[in-house]
Amino acid sequence: GQNIDQPTEMTATEGAIVQINCTYQTSGFNGLFWYQQHAGEAPTFLSYNVLDGLEEKGRFSSFLSRSKGYSYLLLKELQMKDSASYLCAVRDSNYQLIWGAGTKLIIKP
Amino acid sequence: IAGITQAPTSQILAAGRRMTLRCTQDMRHNAMYWYRQDLGLGLRLIHYSNTAGTTGKGEVPDGYSVSRANTDDFPLTLASAVPSQTSVYFCASSHGGAGELFFGEGSRLTVL
Image (cartoon, rainbow over all chains, first blue to last red; front, top):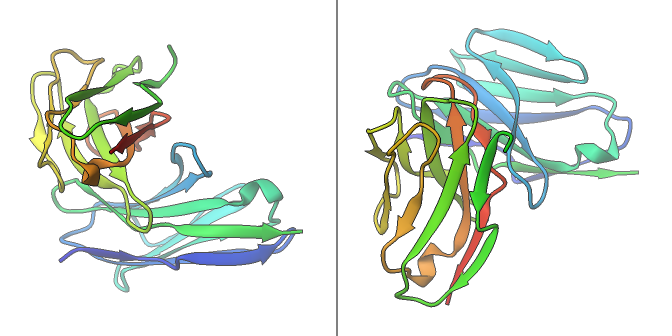
């Protein structure tokens, strides 16, 4: 079966750095997405990786290793507004998105 | 309208009733999707449409139907609601089948 694993919840301190991991087992691979979802709101797109390596976008970076079935989202200089759930999703060989359950990130002052 | 609009935003429904969740987008995206989101689970695909006039079943299609008469609208119908359909429903669209998804604000449905 297809599976996306990410931690249920993480806590970090304002101003610090946090890494949210995602491991996947899917039928084929056509890219990995990270979305941010604030409580009670819709998910919004953060990043997309299809090749191995690091993609940097401001305070957020996303890394992919296809051979290991592994990705992480790195958030730097954490702000209170970064408190949200972070969703990992993999597009499989049928171009369908398989979603992880999300990681709830709690930022403490 | 800007982006994707869903209606209603929230609804309480008696079991056995018929309900249609509306979704409209103004981005001229070809592909549209309906997901449900339940606590502790990832987003699960109910139905999708790659282009106007075509629809397909996702991971959890039972009890739901969709239509795609034109590019902009993609309504989701629950023919006879059951309590297990209590969930938050998100409509989404993408330009083609491989691009990022844009989500509506969600419809919170409670079936009693």
